[in-house]
Image (cartoon, rainbow, N blue to C red; front, top):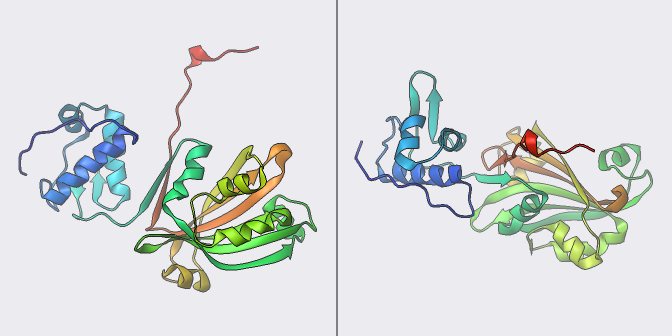
Amino acid sequence: MASRAAHAPRTGGAPQYALLAQELLRGIGAGDYPVGSLLPTEAELCRQFSVSRITARAALKELQARGMVSRRAGIGTRVEQAQAEERFVHVSDSVEALLQFTAETRFRMVSSRALVADARQAEELQCGEGQQLFEAVGLRTRERKPALCLTRLVFPSVFSAVGGRLDGHRGSVMLLLEQMFGVHLAEMRQVIEAAPLRAAEARLLGAAPREAALVTRRWHLGEGGRLLIASVSLYPHRRYSYALRMRRQRADTLSFT
């Protein structure tokens, strides 16, 4: 392996593990770590880049998630390919991060319709049975890249005018709703699961039928639990990763009343 000077990743808006992962990606692309070679161990990365063991481990896991390396106990971290898989990695630590991650994408409308919630839909959407709704289905797209996801949005019919602004809209639909109607997002609920793509879904996404997909279900709620938007998004598994960052509060900072 070619020797090179190691520099600590520069701090900035991105977390330190992501900066270290980018530095390692740069080294792999430059041939400093050829395919088949082993990356430095976690302890070596800590010394070379002046980072913690947790940061080094998270950076290596990031490369593994991108398909760049494989990791085996007792052997190390082996470089498997020199080019990262095309994947949108979304790191979230707040409601604001969830709303802003779509800033790089546009919504391309596929279909829209009015509907009335039956019992099953009312339970799924967490709204009242018989409620009048507006549904929009579209693709989240990026410049010169495959569609990121197929998304179904459902709004109470009072917000149906948003349909005229969706096609080509860049960024969060929830923020658009707040701007148009003066509503306020009070709570967001999310469920993540896996499912195979159906033929029609795969065709729209340019993916293979039955390909594994990450499914995110979100409910955007206003004051008093009022439904603002319910959404279901399908992400082909090689195009998207979701990472959640949480901090543990120190026990000595907790107060009880």
